[in-house]
Image 1 (tube, rainbow, N blue to C red):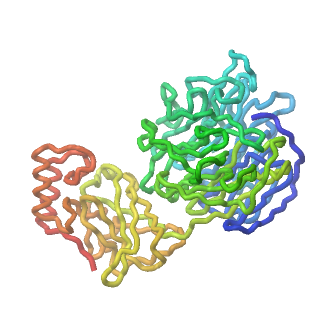
Image 2: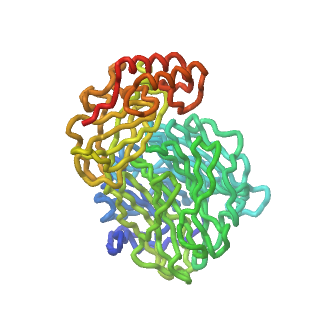
Image 3: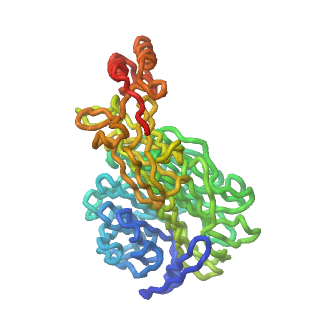
Length: 603
C-alpha cells in the first residue's frame, strides 16, 4: 500500500453499457477508482455491492446492470484497500485502511456494516490498533455456519523501512457479534518479512472458511507461498508456516505499462455440496517462465492443507504473453471456480484485455474467455491499483476491474451468467450408513445420479456426481447437458440398490434454480416404494455389492468372505455400514436384504 492521490470526491451517478459477448457495465470514470471489491448477496442475487479506492462504494438492485455510487465516510477515516463480504442475514461488511487526521497513516483496520444492501453504512469498528505499527492489505470472510467474521492482514513495524530491525507479520482477528467488536489481533505467521513492501515482505493473506469451521489462509513472502489454518474458529493456529509452493521471481514484479504489479495469493475453500466440498484452492501469478510471460496458477489440497497438488496453469494461451492481477472465487452453490485476470495474449504490445477462466471439475481443467469489450493501453505513470475481484453465486458471476486508458481510470463489471443448467439438490440416505441414534451417516459419500427419460427405453439424458453430506444428507448435482424436461431421478451408490424416483418423473428446468428432491421423507418418493424405513427416515437398501441390481447370495458370499478375512479400509464395497471394517454387522444387513430378495424397481 503506497500513497495515491484522490482526484475528486463525487456522489453523482452514471453508468454505461458496452455490448460484447458479455455486457460490460461502466460503474464510474471519475475519482480515479482502482483496487475494487465486489460481493453478491446469495440470498438475493439482485443485490450486489462493490467498493473501490479511495473511499467509494456502489450498490445495485438489479444484479449489476445499474449502479449507485456514493462516498464512504467514517470518523476513523477511509483510505483504500476495500474488502467487501456479506453474511447469511444479508448484512454487508466493508473493510478498509485509515489515514486519520491527528493520527498516523494506516493506524488500524476499520470494518463498516450495511443492513440495507449497501445503501447506508455505520461508522464502523476496528481491529489492529497497535501504535506505532501500521496495518495494511486486509481481507474479510464470513463463516456461513455462524456468521463469524474473520480478517487477516499485514502489520508493518514501519511501512517502507529498509531497517533490518523492522519486520512485517500476518495478523488475524475475528468478530463474533456481527462486526460490533473485534478480538485482539493475533500474529499467525512464524517467519517474519521485511518492511520494504517487496518480495521479502509477508503479504496477501486472504482468509476463507472450511466446511467444519476451519479458517484457512495463505500468503507470500521470503519462504514462497505458505499456508496456515485454525481448526477452532481462529483461536489457535499451526505451530509453523506450512510451505505450499515456490513463487519463482517473487510476488513483486514488473509489467510494462503498469505502475506496479504483484502475484499475491488468493485462498478459497469449496463449501458446496458438490463433489469437491472441502477442497482448498490457492491462486496466484508469477514469472517462472520469464519476465515477459507472467502466468496465472492454481494449486489445491483435498486433505485440509496437509498435502498439495501439482501446480496447474490457469491461462490456456501459448507461452510468451502476460497474464497478471488474478483473483479467484468459488460459486458456493455449485463448487465451480471463477478467475479474473488481465491478459495480453492477443497483442504484441501493451494493449490489455480482461479474461476470465472457469473450472467445473475442481481445478483440473479451465475454460478461458474474454469479458472486456475492448482493450486498453495503460500508462505506468498512473497508479493502477493492486488487485481486481470477482463474485459468484448459483451461476451469476460478476467480475470487477480497473481500466486505464493512458492515464484515465475507470471501473467496470460484466454480466456473466451461467444459469443454463439443471440444478438438483438431492436428499438421500444409505441404509447401512445411517445411524438413527445420532441422526447422521457414518461418513459423507459419493452418489451418482442419472436423469432418465420417462418413456421407454428410458434413455439416459445426463448424469452427475455429488457428495452426500453426513449431517444434512444433501448432495448437489449439476446437469449441463440435459434440456428442460421431465425425468426420472435415478440414484446409484457403490453398495446400495439403484433407486428411481416416484412414478411419472420430475419436471426439471434448465435455469440454475435449485430443485429439491427428498428420498428420505416418504416411501412413495421411490418408484415401486423401493425404500427401507430406518429410524423414521427412508433410505436406499444397502447390500448390492456387485451392482447387478439384486441383493442375493452372491452379495452375501462376498460380504461373508471379507468379514471372515477381517478386511478393512475405506470404500470397501462389502463394508455396507461405512465403518471401514467388514464384520458381522455388514453380513447381517446383507443377509436380511438377500432373504427379502431386494432388487431394483424401475418402470
